[in-house]
Image 1 (spheres, rainbow, N blue to C red):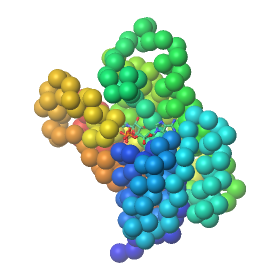
Image 2 (tube, rainbow, N blue to C red; image 1 turned 45 degrees about the vertical axis):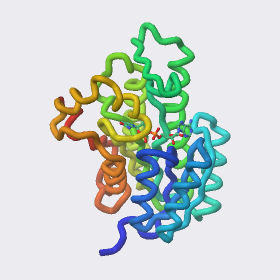
Image 3 (cartoon, rainbow, N blue to C red; image 1 turned 45 degrees about the horizontal axis):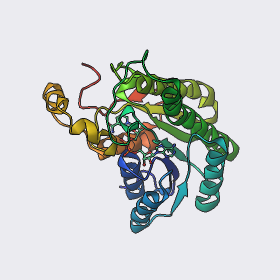
Image 4 (cartoon, rainbow, N blue to C red; image 1 turned 90 degrees about the horizontal axis):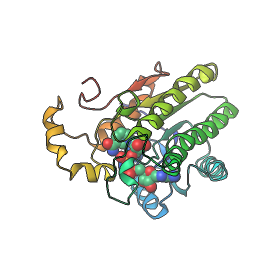
Length: 260
Ligand SMILES: NC(=O)c1ccc[n+]([C@@H]2O[C@H](COP(=O)([O-])OP(=O)(O)OC[C@H]3O[C@@H](n4cnc5c(N)ncnc54)[C@H](O)[C@@H]3O)[C@@H](O)[C@H]2O)c1
C-alpha cells in the first residue's frame, strides 16, 4: 500500500511535545516532510531528528504563535526549507494547568484576572488564527489546495467549570475552522478541528496526579486516558486522501467523554 502522505509537506505547531510531536512522527511514517515549530527549540530539534530518522526532511523552527511577525517568519522558513506547504496541523496551545508552572489553578470566569484571560486567548485563539491565516495564504498562492487542521478540545462543545477561558478559546478554534472551511472550499482547502478528550501528555500531568483522575477514568466509557498517537491518527486521517470530503467538522478522539 502506498504511503498516505507520500511527498507532502506538513507544518506542525506545538510539535516539540505531546500531540504535536506524535503527529510529526506519524506523518513522517506515512511519507511527509515536516516543519516542526514550537517555542521550545531544543525539544523541537528532537522531534525533527526523529522525523529525519524515518528518512524524511525536517526543519525545526522556533516560534511564539501569538506573535504575527514570528508566525510569518515560520511560514517563510517552512516553505523555503521544505519547498511548499500541503498540510497544517495547528497544535500549539496551553491550558489552565500551565498558569502556575505546573500547579493546577481552577478559577471561575468571574474571578480570573483579565491578563490571564488574554494570555490564554493570545496563544490558543490568536495563535491558531495567525497560523491558519498564514498557511491559507500560502496554500492559495500555490494553487493546489491543502489541509488545515486545528487541535481544539472536547471543551469546544462541553463547558468545564473552573477552566472556562480554555473552553471558550477552543470553541473559538472550532468556529474558526468552520468559518475558514466556508471561505476556503473554493480553493480546495479543507479546514477541520480535532476535539480530543483527556490525552496523556505533559499538559495533563497535573490532572493525572490529582485526586479526581481515577474517578474520571472509571466514569469514562473506554476507561482509559488517550494516547498522543490516538490524536495523531485522527490528524493523519484528515490530512490524507481518506479524509478529503471532511470540511468544517470536528472529530473527537476522546474515548467517549464528549457524549456524556
Ligand atoms: N492533552 C490533552 O488532554 C488535550 C486535550 C484536548 C486538547 N488538547 C490540545 O492539544 C494541543 C497539544 O497539547 P498537548 O497535550 O500535546 O500539550 P503539550 O504541553 O505536550 O504540548 C503543547 C506544545 O505547544 C507549545 N506551545 C505552547 N505555547 C506556544 C506558543 N505560544 N508558541 C509556540 N508553541 C507553543 C509547547 O511548547 C508544547 O511543546 C493543545 O492545543 C491542547 O490545548 C490537549
